[in-house]
Length: 99
Image (cartoon, rainbow, N blue to C red; front, side, top):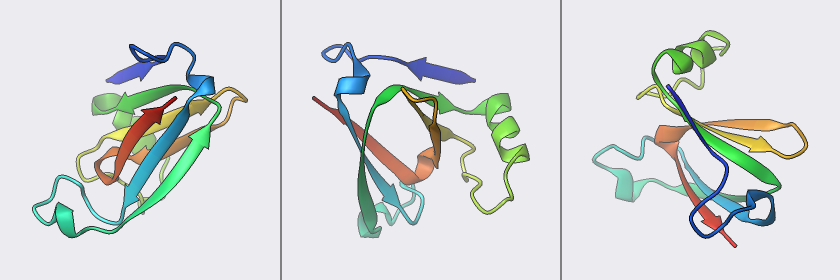
């Protein structure tokens, strides 16, 4: 299943927002989550984001070299206004959208 979002309740044009991610070395759903170190990154120019799981996640995993498979088979995809995309293991990332 793929769920795509192009705005929030308060931000109608995502390309003007800053997307902040905290990317973790381990699974954020694990018992030791509070002990995980994360790296913060910021993006601008994002026009949409998608959460992917189920059969759609199987397609992503089939194109992978196997080193970045999400344990829960869920992915976050950022779609940029310039046509680029960035894919993350959703179980390893938290996202915030800032004005």
